[in-house]
Image 1 (cartoon, rainbow, N blue to C red):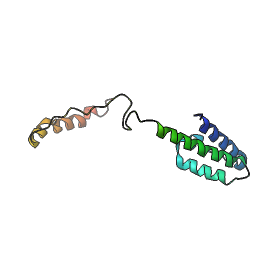
Image 2: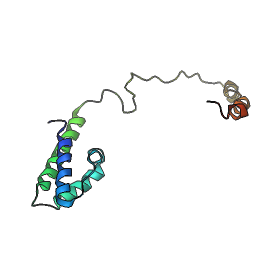
Image 3: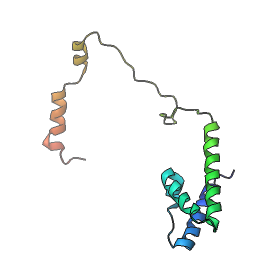
Image 4: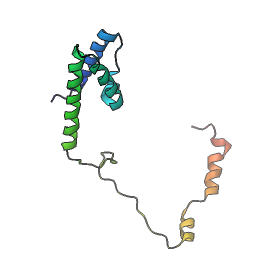
Length: 124
């Protein structure tokens, strides 16, 4: 199926609603927001004697085919990946005690002094 079909159908629905109601739709929101698309398709069903009903059914079918096609594609990368390659966790070395852990942290008082110093208030 043509990947632009949903866009073409949404544009035709927009024009048909402009003709019937004098009010169009947000085409990009219809393509990206399923709740908005559902509401628009319900309006299309309310006009059975017009082209809107047929366009609404075609849009539903095109969306269902798109969902099936995406579900059939294997996920190469995980959903939390940034597509820049395999992520590795940071190097982690266990501490033998809580005191070792605290000693490995930077001195927070010095960091706070640097952050709150008046000389940095207007610096860019």
